[in-house]
Length: 293
Figure 1 (tube, helix red, strand yellow):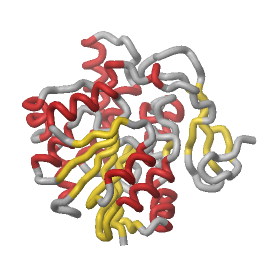
Figure 2 (tube, rainbow, N blue to C red):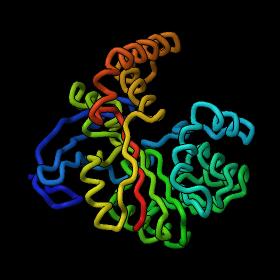
Figure 3 (cartoon, helix red, strand yellow):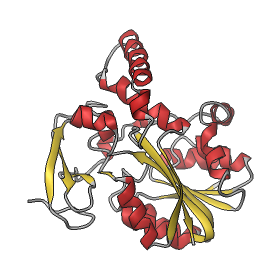
Figure 4 (cartoon, helix red, strand yellow):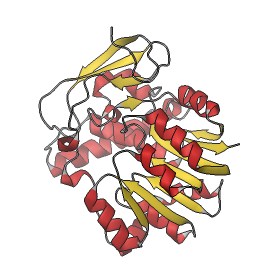
């Protein structure tokens, strides 16, 4: 029986799935659920994950485009952070296209970033002039960026090989009163219960862990981090509900018109299921804010 890589507990097979979202290769990936901590984890992690992050994984918009996007549908992210901290030094883990980074810069934060993609690193340095550390091990890079008022990771912790070490490094780097903001897929989601391995937020093999919010919060408390906000119904969470049903209806290589039809159908399904997915932390993704004592 496979042991949980995070707590060493016994586990059971949850499901086996291919790379349904991007259709890279034909390998089957086994996800197991820990019977002790509840974490859903990928058992057979590829030795080299780079091929599963193609160049088109995210786009790199210019500064004007970044600001236009940051002031539109993505505005909720900086608004959420500024409810808890107003200024200071902020580190973003996995900034990717830089949309949140530009929000934080424009809000007056002193921004640094840790990113594994070299093209994204160069883009962030050139477009924003911020400090960027290129690393696939953010838990090691954070110490060099301390002290920090905020550490933010939007849908990143599920990708890293050592999520608890990342949280510990963030806790160590934060000033007292500073916050760690994490958004991540929710293994308690209604959609996962219905779709199992076909749920798009499994995103095999890029998502190595799906972390229950109660397990994550328990771990955080042990690191001196107390929860001050937990939600699945922020703007981002509601978007990921619709995204899940959209991607459940599509396949890699789908035509533009068929994809648009799947997107509209996904929105309709999410609207119909809103009474279920918007109650009891059953949404596709959760966001948690943790404050250092």
